[in-house]
Image 1 (cartoon, rainbow, N blue to C red):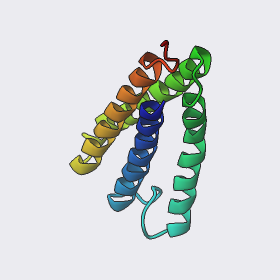
Image 2 (cartoon, rainbow, N blue to C red):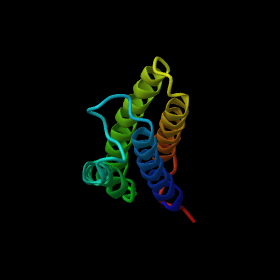
Image 3 (spheres, rainbow, N blue to C red):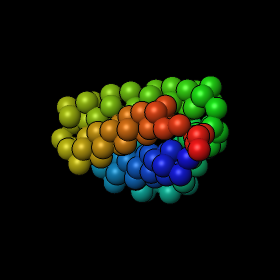
Amino acid sequence: MKLRLSLVTLAIISSVVCLLFSAKYPTGPNTVSFDKPEELLLSIGYMIILALPCLILAAFNHIIPRIISAIIQLLAMLLWGALSVLMLFFPVFPLAIVCFITALILLISAIVTLSVNGSRQT
């Protein structure tokens, strides 16, 4: 269970780091930037609140909540992966790399959430 929770927590942290990178390299006037700190904090808060169900569901040892958590993580992985592909068309390669790393962390977290068994038979 520690491995599942630590990987989901790492995925949440990498998503926040990815959001901070996107604030550092804004692609337009309507994107998140450090010039508007209240919108940046609101975006970080929304991201953490949306990721909390994955963290809570990964804590259970039953397979059904873990499957739901993995599905949510895989959907987030698809979004970050699509964002990394889109960022390749803009001249913002550090953001594309960070989005790709976040997508990889989410994929690994979803696989570990599904594969690691919580009950030990002794």
